[in-house]
Length: 494
Image 1 (cartoon, helix red, strand yellow):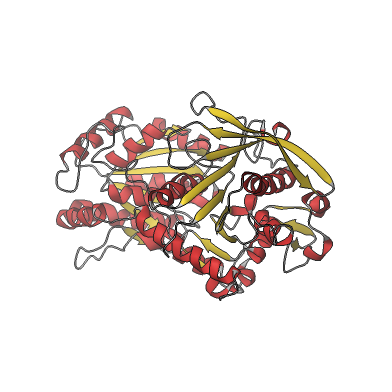
Image 2 (tube, one colour):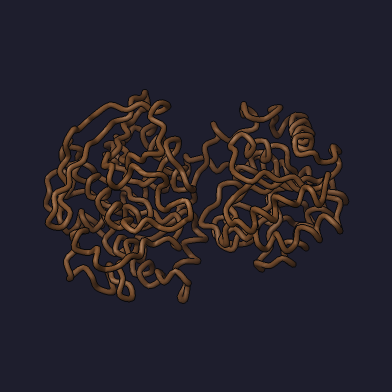
């Protein structure tokens, strides 16, 4: 590839503006990497009411943008971020759909009933913006079910458009469990005729499935780790997407997420009490001491400290930890620091543990980014008992901070953590296979016994972990390969 690509990113969230999960981290990082490699990038996001416009000032770019939805023309505005980034970020302003608390659901976690209309409109508005401003996209990069309809709009309505008709589409699946399945009566507003409401496109047991349609229409589909790509394409996978993913053949792959080492690097992290590196770990001892102090734990550098940062959701396996943690702190000389929120019952359980096990367990219910950094830096181990994990980022952060992961063998966790070999001391963490409280108990026991009985192995594991490189550079190269494959297929060369 000799010439720079014109890359349009359409996404429902992105750091630093708004975030609910890893999708936002990817959209916040990958466009910047692509721009640094010389490509022409633009990003389009919804203008949510939750975005802090004092922190992220915007200017009006289009006062009026007409977007056809079925037989209705909707009118919106477009703002552009005022910044010094190497690429522009645009926000679709349409108060009826986006000026409300929350992104996808209300405070009780009920999906907004108009979600299919909101994100079908956003997908089409982003394409219309590209057309009206004359951005000749080579690649339209879409993310999850919220923007998957754009792949269909590009093929159905804009296939011969001189601006975007020649663009190839790539759809990244960040979590296949979230598919955007809604009543079929939204089909008319979305502008998809009945010939597209078929089992191989948008129809799904009498309902409309945005992700399924996007998979069918996209020129290339990827997910966020090689192992997760393998898992979700296995026959009988509960997502039900395996037949449609395997039908893509060599146009479906897993590309591991990168991480931002300017943000997550103990050598330069301003959020931690002391910086450190693989060559000088003295700062990590200080970080551990301050973490113990701030959570009222026994201050002792010789007690292994396990960190947990997680949503309290079924996916993350924190209910399994709840079944095991009391036995762990009773039977082992070990400490826990837990940061998270979600399921109210789990919030109550983990929130009460410090009072029941003073000096052994500390918890913070909610989310605090500064505290997340301090937990990564001050812990000896980091526990992720996920039932499934498309990629996972905290285990990668942990490696950089010399905080050894204890993880279940699923998705990206298996791609990024190397099992400890008790004979040689090689590896970067501790892996278990069965999603159960017993597996958590015994694998944690294995890690704790290694900490006490095989110090030289712990030191070797830390060195191995901290020298791993999961920066965006390699992942960006894999995305460029996927872009080229998508473009070749779109042009009929594959």
